[in-house]
Length: 156
Ligand SMILES: [Zn+2]
Image (cartoon, rainbow, N blue to C red):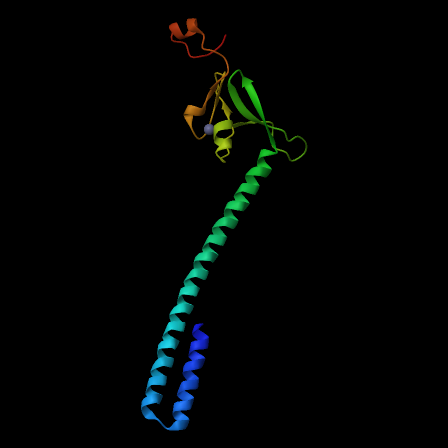
């Protein structure tokens, strides 16, 4: 029996008791209606809390979906490239007016849903991730002669 149906039954009992002018039965019926009303209030409170929780979950899920759709759209703008054997980057595919200049995204960060345009160093030969230094890519092997002389530089 729902809270509403049991309240209705309690009110009917109270009405019958009133019509019979039976004070004891009337007090019992009123007590029963009060208990049912309190139960209904508790049920409504529980439903309200459940509704708030479901609304928060819906907002959270909607935000996650929007982020996933954005990432998916962003992925279509890049192609995975092997920039040297064993070293991967995402290369921008967009060209034309208003498109950003050609660039590489850090593959590790991009796969984790973050954007990090790789930056070349002044000495050249290295692409550095803006977020994590460990993600850098050495394009050319270090020159052992230059390293022995303490010269900065890779390659030549
Ligand atoms: Zn990175």
